[in-house]
Length: 308
Image 1 (cartoon, rainbow, N blue to C red):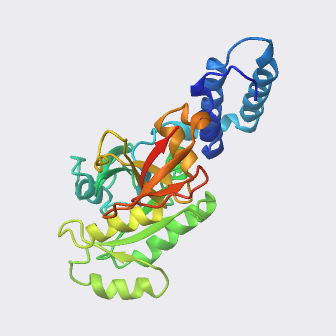
Image 2 (cartoon, rainbow, N blue to C red):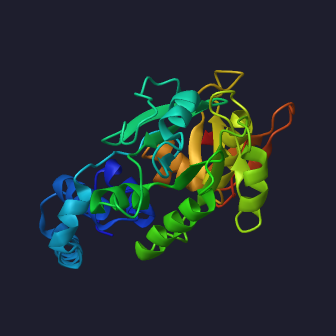
Image 3 (spheres, helix red, strand yellow):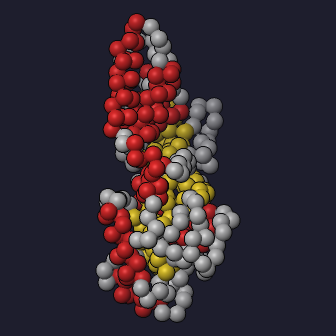
């Protein structure tokens, strides 16, 4: 990599490795090109960035523009899309988990466009997205794009309906057609409090793994929040400084499981990438720290004090 690059340039390489969609990669490369110094020493790097952008644009078919009719920026510790057939309780679940005021009614297509809101879980926020009903009659490309970009899908169905097995089958077929069946999905059976729901749940579980909940009675919702957190495969890491005895436990850094200490260092301060020497690792309720290096694999709840 050429010398004399600005400190903010280096973290973009890490972001580029983690980016999934071509659109996200192009956006990151555009920012890298914009802040890259324009001199002879960076000519090769500039050409490489431009070549990558051009290649990604060629690999992104023009027809995909329709799929991004609605673009939702990811916020919080992860993005979770709520999907399912009409009147299954999508908006009710959305409101119950986020305290948002989405329109809830007993008729189909109350939700017409995707709506985001934040779900609190312990000391972090997770973004939920309420979406219109998904069915063989209504499966637009832009809805596919929303579900594709989400980290997790919550597929919710009405346990009081006699045709719930068929609805789950139809839902899975749509995901297969969209090549989304390998995504992280939590199947939910809503309205477990209603008559006949428990019997229907037995029939459903003969073929599917379904978690029973009730949005109205708030049954199983706290357990669902933990299941979402666990499935996101993320960790919370806290930092402290020498002049402060305690870390800020209300604002953790969020990383993917398996993340290294150097990744955290780059999030805290850009110059830590080159100035990092070592770090002290504290565990909750322990006083004696352990010295760790930049390759240390972080764990949920770690407390880190970095020295440079």
